[in-house]
Image 1 (cartoon, rainbow, N blue to C red):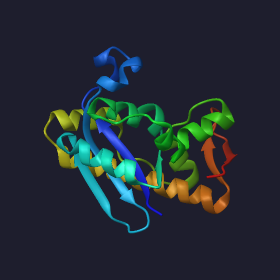
Image 2 (image 1 turned 180 degrees about the horizontal axis):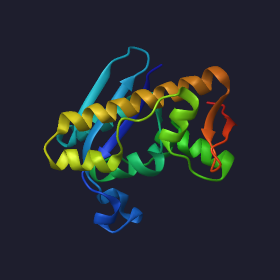
Image 3 (image 1 turned 120 degrees about the vertical axis):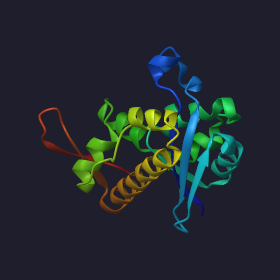
Amino acid sequence: MKTLVFDLETKNLAREVGGWSNIDKLGLAAAVLLHVETGEVLRYVEQDASDLIAQLLKADRVVGFNVVRFDYVVLRPYGLSLNPDLINKSIDILDHLYQYLGFRLSLNNLAEATLNETKSADGIIAVQWFRDGKIDQVLDYCEQDVRVTYRLWEFGRENGHVKYRDRDFRLQRVPVSW
């Protein structure tokens, strides 16, 4: 079994490319894959997009947060086809929770409530780092998100639920079956 945990960061913000309906115009700044079975971390920049896509397609399972509606769409201009095989082998944590709850949660909310940890930055800051030529900072941030996503997925697998804070800051549980 080859399980990859995946995240990417973009070169642009949604408002700069005409809104969220133009995700495919955001551009790949950096991406990170964590090979769960070996612990190997693979880092990619835009010129490595074809290698990144090859790894995603060879995986038996891809775990991510909003990968189907965001990360994969960002990769479409680089040659990724959103075929059913890729979608079926993907565990999209955000989509799974949205299907159950009917609303979206942030990775930071889930990480804080479930794992008692927070993200180190956000995508807006990552775009600025990219523009400032700080690609190592972008890759480090992306890797941290991958590791948080992995721990969240593992927690859900081991405990059958993850946690979040609702609008009144009450701790809630969501059953998961990944």
